[in-house]
Image (cartoon, rainbow, N blue to C red; front, side):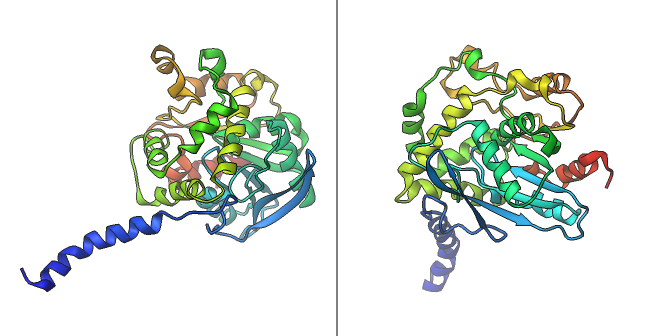
Length: 336
């Protein structure tokens, strides 16, 4: 075989190796080095004797319809992962605010902070007040769904509509038998996080066993923070947040919601916090979204349930065109 032939055969392998090397980027503890699709602004405020900053994108509507949508990301997500939704919403006339909550992504990660959904809701409400937004559609995905429920319970007059996309918290994992490992246990677990582990989990749970290349940047976004010099503070805040999720259910307050609510559910979802820690007989009962979604819709007043039978935990990312057609159809009861 000629040297030229050998070189040509080696090109695909080199391309793969170069791609893999490029993917293994280390980001700073506030996701320094990872670019968001729109300019990132900072909301500076004091909370619990900490000087904090909350990163957010404020994306104007193409042709404003007078409504604002506030996007609340999930535990393994950032504001940037709402990219397709931001595009669809702004093109439909909505102003969009997409923030990184404290402890996540490009926002502050304090060494000591009493995380609660009430606190994160208050932080978000303060951001909107600073932007002179009195009322907004609140849309939360995954853990952001739990936060959205708490926000709507605390600030019903400021919530025009609540949109829940595969929210977690449709069951109480602790009451069902998921063991408590405490903050220290979560911290040790988070220190072991890698891109391979993130990818395998997301493929199975978020995308119903499927994988596409456009999911990979979001894996590397998360994994990059665990490769950097600030991995300990990232892992510590993540552990505090997991403890918040586990110990602060919203499950018992669905009937108290007074705002119009949309539930968008990918029925292939099996997400349940601490599921792997539970005994096998308990594990198989957790994260049954086809059942959980229908039960929640019955309990939440003035709610509408929209199901996606073939998609998992993140239908807005797995099937963006189909998801956003349905979203825009039902936002504020309008048909687009």
